[in-house]
Length: 219
Image (cartoon, rainbow, N blue to C red; front, side, top):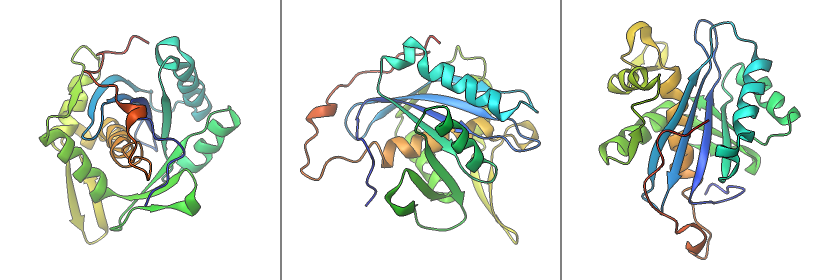
């Protein structure tokens, strides 16, 4: 069983997909509200320009983290640790933040690394989580966000393709972009299976706040 450090049932999840050439880094801020099954609101989206220095991405995310509109809520930072993401997690730690790391794998089982704030999550699990939340109509995207249309395109083409080289996570957006949908997928999985856990005694009183997310988040 996954043992999260904290189990707030209402929180803002800042989920960062770390870009690798030729893909940019992308951030999704997702508000999670209510007891399971939770409701999610994609309240903020950002994509950095190609070639942006990772130090700048970390600085920008820290600025958002400390923004009063974000800081007034319970917050969790999730960072894609796959590939070049490992040193990025260390940059966040050096900046005084405590990110959760997600390494995307081609396996079948989710594992927690040494009971630390790091998980290995199969692509198929990320995809199925997004599909379940979408089918349950439990996620809203603020249509006023500048990247909302791009995210919608990526979500529409979301699929897992098995090739001789292994699994490929595909989105239907032009150019095969999947940076936004990956940020959202990591955040939704985290919301469902880490924040969604409750204490062993079944006490949910700490998270009985409910209601619709505020869209968009004013940052």
